[in-house]
Length: 399
Image 1 (cartoon, rainbow, N blue to C red):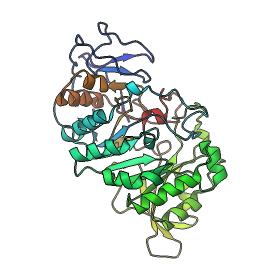
Image 2: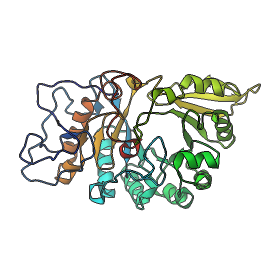
Image 3: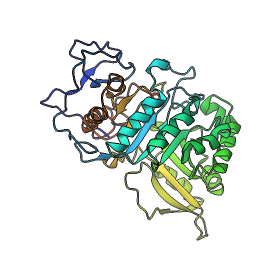
Image 4: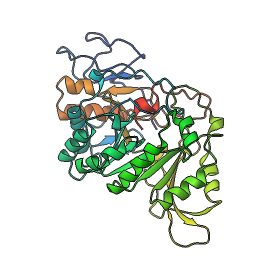
């Protein structure tokens, strides 16, 4: 959902993946180094020049981009590690994880969220990973954010492995609800997709989340051709029967194996058609707004009573970039204006170098002003011939 524009005023510098950022060269700047991901925050340097403004970017207010979109939906990744190895996300052997020194600390996460909410108008927070439950201090992180923002909606995207032991403590810390990734109800298929035999742990986590009132609970399923594409109706039936909202996500090119193909994507129109074989779908009367999921009311055939809701996130075949309201911060404190961006803006280095809240806010405004139109460029479409997959995978970005 982003686009690139030239600027008469020198803005953040683009450096290649793995480049060394020096303090006295052209690629230095307080929190303004933009990379393609992979490198960590530069060490503190008292000689680092002040952040240079981006031409045209607002000097106050919220996170406006050049296409008139305003980012109010904050996604913060707290870790890149995961305890599953989903085939559409990372290789079987995992990824090179960030060293602890490059991860945002609990206090740094807390401050970045506070700037986003108090200075930039963020209205909701989603905590992501990797797998957030891998962080032992997750309750501490949430409690700190909640103390600063008593009314902020805080949700968590998780695979629910281990959630059975922590659902209540997370609720007590201030978490409102969870989104749980679950692509199948069959143990064998689950093991094939995630490379781990943990379906029972996910279901136990869901039960604990419901008991802790971490709802509404949404179930996220990525459909893969020939693997779980026959489970659309069973998943919807199971979800509405248990009071969950089922959401189907088109497979996106963010995998670690770089094996994604548009021909393997189950398009939204086919998902809707499959659901309508067993249910009646009615467009949600509340409308979609800037939500990534198109939402439908679900009724069983021949019945008038509302059974539940289902959502479809169609990033590939029915892009919704024009209404995007999201801004992302990676686990190493880099701003990603678009999920598919090839550039990031380093916020954590500026924080560690002593930038005040307004300084951090302005770096963020400048980064979001440069947000591409769609899918990391000026052109819409993940299946187009010239699309280039971003360097980081989904686990390293944060959903």
